[in-house]
Image (cartoon, rainbow, N blue to C red):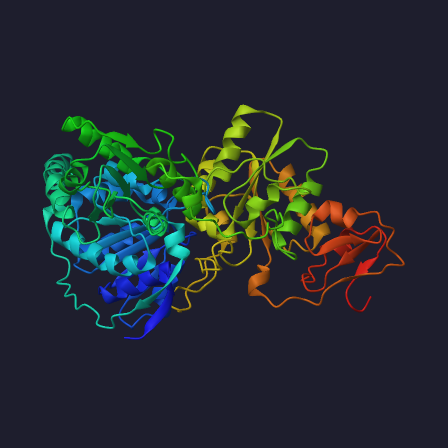
Length: 597
């Protein structure tokens, strides 16, 4: 077999195909997105793939397939599990027939998330087994094991790659033999209907299963115990790779335990590791999950062993681990001199580049229009999760709150009830509107909220890589589907004022927002203009140096990365400009225009 260079997410996808997965659902979210996209691209022809409207829907579709005996997989990032937690908790009691793997990509740092939440906690909370791969190669093989364990114990299982596993790359020899999985179909049974008494009985079964799984995991092939000595190191996930990289340069005897299944914790293997040790260092990312398990074991079996880790301050309490940070911790723990430490690669310092809306982004025009329309009024602007969260940066300063997907609409309603006389404006993207914005609109109409809803419709799910959604009229299987109209949905929900316009027409946009703000009740404005990544750019605009006075209005008002000041005159970098025209509309001296000007 010829090796193929694969990103971790691609490896997970190819491992799932190899394992005979039949149904794959998900909602895009970095760092998980490429898993589903790879399965769609490499589909052998018998796998159903969909971007679901949100993570809850995705998990429920996958669960239905697993009820019928199909192997199913659902993908999301760690905050997406919050959305899917309701069905996930119940499914832990109900169980499955076909193997079902819930891939939840955690994001230490965080690099592209609101939180650093650790899915290993959710595994213990929901009483679901969790697999924690340490490399793309391991993820490729481990995903097949996850399906097998799911079917063996008739339970959904969690699969928890982190960002560096998801986005790291490795050369992997792919096995082209796809497992044959026979799905016998759904068989009617009272066990599929959750009632309180059944839940109680199933809870007992789940608790009884826990020690059996822990025993099974103690001999699992990716849980490894090596070395000897009085000191021990325990690690898992990507931190194992960092530890191994440092251990290759260390001398001296030390025991090493790798944990690939943090829940249920492989107690038997851990006790074997702890025998004869005086002190242990636990190297893990995010929360002290393994560290607490070891502390519990030491208490349970009265073992006089010092456990070091996050709780003791030996490992950083937040953010990503790195080869260098793990190396420093290992050298301190093993009492080695600084001269023994691996010298980190000396790279030049990167320039500071704050996140910014792209040149030509329609959201910049939308924010600017709303900002000008609301001048003279006291207003609060509630934002949401997406590219448009960047509207909080200067000079726009148009996102005052951002909590989670869909929350801007309902946060605005709470602010309205708490503070009379302040106009509440909420922003939501088109994909987020379908994901979790509709319920907030229903809540606002039903409870007679007085606010303005701004829907930023750029015809894609831009922040995670331009995936389709119900408003685009395309599915992940490549089919054309009924394009759901946001305007018609809002009207059907009872919103009395609904208007649509192109945000690049600044004057019309301003007037439309003013009318919406004057309306009593929930009013909505839909700004419709495609993301620059899915459209052909217009010719770049230019500055007429003779007309430009150097007033800087175009730069100070818009913050477009294509515009700079040179020789006290505005200048547009043609390689960045997408010809959106809003700079020309704000210039008071008619100094900016297309190539013809």
